[in-house]
Length: 237
Ligand code: HEC
Ligand code: HEC
Image (tube, rainbow, N blue to C red):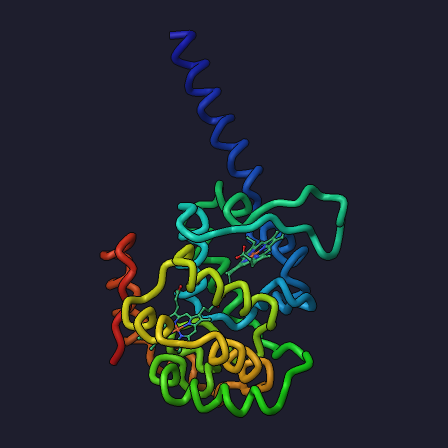
């Protein structure tokens, strides 16, 4: 009997310890913002802005990091207590529950995406727009600014992050939608550079009120993704 109580007690303590170690949403978000910037708006080219990122894409990204199915490189804290040890996206979310990851994604989706102010080459940007309109706008509409596409936000994202992302796709280190892969694999190095300058040049903001309008579609996408988790496939209307 005594050992039963001890076990129950240590289980309860263990649960308590893991809850407090993971923290509540505000604590977790404060940690994220140590690298991603206040309200998830990054000031650093190697760190993506996560404010306004479509909720389900964001949650998916976090699940993939937690499963170590997406490359995560070591990064230093950019603000707050910068003496904290460098860590990786995979480590940051390793102990967080599904519910917490969903809450985090919902939290950042409510915050406005703010386009990065960065230098770009206007000639390359014009060439990149042509490539984008031809190959990418189908899924990344409004120049990659429409959160309803559930395909991330490309317009106004940081060049450093985009360069790293294209390299991860090209090497196969980061998995991608099969149809997107066909398009990506057909790009020349010059196309890729041009696309990155195009996204850096645009500070498009999706038209007001569009978010949530296609909730039904988003719900369907969610179910589809959960069912096929690990198989990475997306569908489009
Ligand atoms: C130590 C710094 C650091 C911390 C802390 C951190 N991140 Fe990141 N995060 C990065 C860096 C750097 C990248 C880009 C490189 C990579 O993917 O590893 C990134 C990438 C991401 C991406 C991918 C963006 C995309 O559009 O696919 C998401 C989403 C993300 N982080 C969310 C979060 C959330 C949510 C938290 C808190 C739970 C968090 N990050 C904490 C540094 C950090
Ligand atoms: C068939 C639809 C489809 C096409 C075509 C497509 N994409 Fe995507 N793309 C997606 C989806 C869906 C995601 C979100 C993937 C995820 O959740 O990891 C995405 C993600 C991305 C990302 C990562 C965003 C981030 O925040 O990390 C980049 C960069 C990207 N696409 C670039 C392109 C470019 C450039 C083209 C054209 C050459 C293209 N895509 C064509 C569907 C597509």
